[in-house]
Length: 173
Image (tube, rainbow, N blue to C red; front, side, top):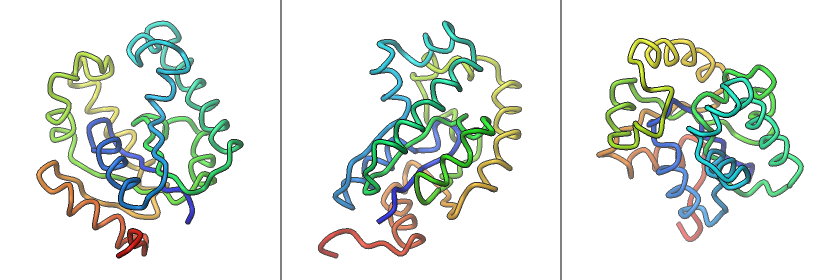
């Protein structure tokens, strides 16, 4: 099995669905944001404040390179929502595995984040996050082998849509 790389706007369900997908397939789960936080010893908010968005994207790019060289195709990778904005990252995402866009409307994404919004500095200004969503949407579409509409109340349906769309069945199914 090739790795499954989940892309989508923040709050689209990449981490939640990614964990369930990895469990269903019996493979490792990698959350790129969590990996960066562990490596750098601070939150994404602090990384953005310390390095700026361009510096943060450089850290993401290095993490993607590390994933490529660390081997292990049997895994599910949840990326950060903005990784697609780095032109250098886009071919790496494809090289990592099969890219799945978890698509949700921007209002639903922001609503899902709820109390975690304070940890997401890029959500501080509504016009800014709407512009980000609009800028990223064609990038997600261009990269994705599969598009799955997500809804928090239908997590199992989203999981089944990914498995079916990629022609995969969980072990023992």
